[in-house]
Image (cartoon, rainbow, N blue to C red; front, side, top):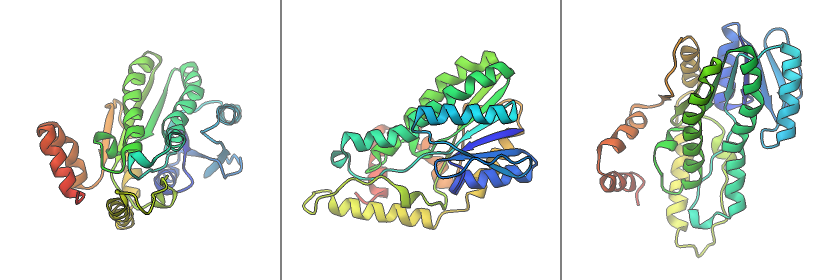
Length: 266
């Protein structure tokens, strides 16, 4: 299969690229900082900035002209954001959504016509378990991922008639460079959120540094690609992370909120 991976130069995307390349798929990794270099075997690269429509359109056209088909698109491009909602400027929130949501949409809009013409294709969106609950000081990130998940629920039903399937994969925390690229608002030294934010930001960074290898996500993707029929949503992570959506669904909202606040020390 010919597989395009956005955000595949590091972290979860890179793990997926390496795993699928070992399984004899032809892999093309797209990113802003890579040079376009198509390879007949191994991993090729494609320069593409998902935050710019022209860059996406040009890159996808170039790829299709070289490969004549695109079987799978795995979208891993995204960034974290952490901080009190009050402190975020609207343009900072827009930056996060431009990558985490609109960037996904731009790629989908360029890819779907190709898959329609082929009569087949799979679109995998790497979301986050954070999409399932509003986590304190992570409102912007949670909202961007929740919006992505709902968008794909609708998209699945729109494209099934063309032989195209789409689903989201929600990972928990894995050891990646996500903490280095988080969007952080300016927190004034007199901010009433300063101490709580400092604690939660440090804990979030430590959790990522101590988290498991993203190869676990890559193996999950490999397993899912082997399936004939796919559900709208899959999850991968530690048991405590995986149980969270079920706990939220079963408990009264106020009780779940109290548990979250206790977990985060609020």
